[in-house]
Length: 116
Image 1 (cartoon, rainbow, N blue to C red):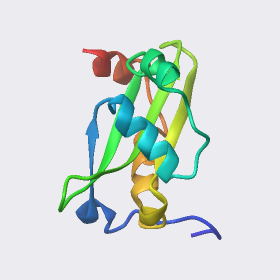
Image 2: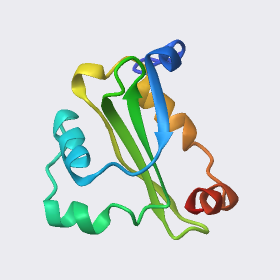
Image 3: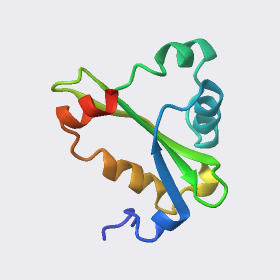
Image 4: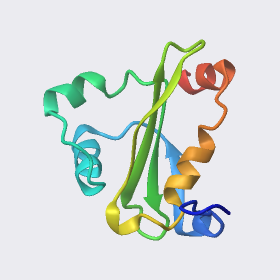
C-alpha cells in the first residue's frame, strides 16, 4: 500500500454505510467536524436531495453519523464525488476508504437504481 493510503480492512466492523441523504443539520455538522468549509442552511436545503447518490457512514456500535459522501452529475456521463467528509476524530480508521470504494465505478444503471 502506498504512502498516505489507508486500508479499509476491519473498518466494516467499526462502521456501517447506509444509502441516504443526511438531513441539513447532520450535513452541516459533518462538514464542520471534518474541517471543511461551512455551507449555509439555505444552500444545504436547496442542494440536499438533488444528488444522484448519497451515503452516510455510521459507527456500528452507536449509530452515530460520522461521515458522508455524495455523487452529483448529469446521470449519464458525468459523476462527481462531492461532500466526502469524515469527522476528524474518526479519520484514519478506513471509513473514508469504505465510502470511496462505493464510488470507484458508478454506472448509469447503478445511479438509476439508486433513484428508485
